[in-house]
Amino acid sequence: MVRTKTQFYLDRRKVLSEITLLPNIISLIRILLIIPIAILYTKPSQLAFYWAVGLLALSYISDFADGEAARRLNMKSALGLIMDPLADKLWTVSMLFLLVLHRDLPIWIATVILLRDVGILVLNGRVLRRTGVVLSSDPYGKSYMVTLGLMVIGMTVRIEESIWIAYFLIPFAIITVGNYYRRATQINKEFAAQATGSVSAL
Image (cartoon, rainbow, N blue to C red; front, side, top):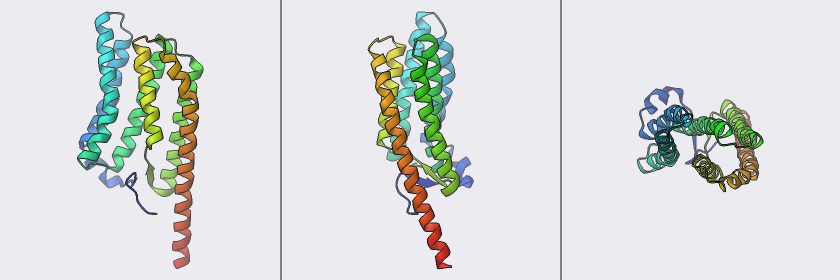
């Protein structure tokens, strides 16, 4: 299988060394920020609200910072391709939980969004187990996360129109899952063809 700029083979021997790369540190910080955000979200004071919004905005921006750092510093890694979407999924689950509890986000919308993430995790897991390739995010997935982040921040600061972003995420979620399925199928086919060619050569 031909490697591309958005596909890396996971080498377990490199995982520990890659954790110290700046993009991966940023992803780790995004995961850790979930804890204080969740705590502050439950506090009734105005100061806690401002801190929650500030940390939420910081965690949202960090989602772009890790990718930009990886590109500019040439620090793309297999671990980064796992940590970045993992941070996104943990962030998404946590923020949806908080929105349902404290901002009246309809449970059915949160469920659809979560099912979208579960579907992508399953697809990625199957591709990784079969081919060793980590399926990275594409422009559709990145645009989806931008939209999701805008909804989370908007509903957090109680902008009523943000609910329409939530409704828009439903068809967007379906489109992104379909696109991931297409990419996963293509990679599996390429791997199967390569494996068949290798056997024939023997």
